[in-house]
Image 1 (spheres, rainbow, N blue to C red):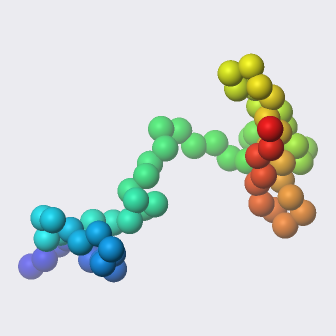
Image 2 (tube, rainbow, N blue to C red):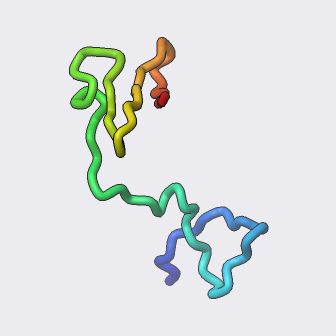
Length: 69
C-alpha cells in the first residue's frame, strides 16, 4: 500500500529519488504567522521600519496587500 501523497510532477525538474515532492509553495512553513487584522487593527495602511528604511504596507480596495518603500 502506497501511503505517500501524489503530486503533479514538474517535468522541468525531474525527481532524482523517484519520489514526487510537493511544490515549494506547499512545503514552505513560516516560523510564525500573524493575521492582517492583528497588524492593521482597523486601518488600511501601516509603517514597517526595516534596517533604517520605512516601508508602507497597504490593503488595496480589492483586498490585496501592497508593500512600498
